[in-house]
Image (tube, rainbow, N blue to C red; front, side):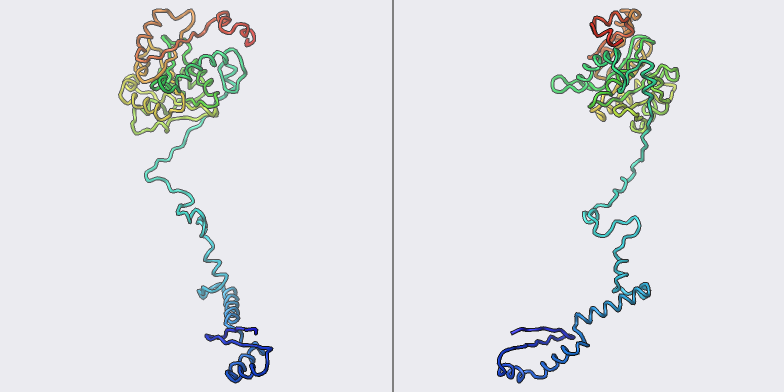
Length: 365
């Protein structure tokens, strides 16, 4: 027996068609003849349709009406209006977006009271530096490059030593000399450039020799960087953050901190508690990088002796055949607060280099 079920209105009518014997069919007709007759008539003409057919026809009529009239009557049944409901407005996250479902906005809002900062950038002319005899990460291998590779290695090891060999603030290195014109700024720039050529070492070069500003021999002038806001501005204004005055360069591992604007009391600023706070902040804030301070000469200014209390290492530049032993001893006594002082002989004649590089001396000339 095969059963067919058709729906019309709010009631359902069952029709049984049978290929069995007539007595069974007669019994069924006797039971409900009018029901079977009405169902048969509807099957023949098919004009009234089922509940599903009526709903589909009504839905089609309303869709066509809504499309013709642009949804002006406010109907919510048209397909056009349904697509309008799910279409996102400009700059709006679409409904069902994974980010919206996760409960997070597409773009996180700024923190309340957050201060927007624009990092300064400069381009260092490395070709010009190479022609002037300075070390650059992309420069050719020569004698000066090799000498600074030898000089930097123990400094880097001390900067990132651990365990019992760890040095307090070992990543802070002061480069200074006993007297002016011994080549400390030349050394500071070359040391920073050589360290920045390492694949896993980042360097921050700090110009803390405010007396040489604008004379062409300070580290920022050597690199072609104008003296703007810098260390002195941070010392004189506690509300100014270090990140406000840092400068990025086209050398990936090298950043700069200029000396800053001149003030009437630079010595007092260096000797202040604020200076100690800034130096300690540098050590804690940037433990992954070497911070090199280019300072004034020890016997010409008091700033190096103050800074020696905070740095972990000192590279003391001595000019060959010019700096006296007494000057060296006097300067070192003022730096006694730092327990890791390395001496570097500068401006030595080429024949002295033969002892250090042997047969390779002529190779690098």
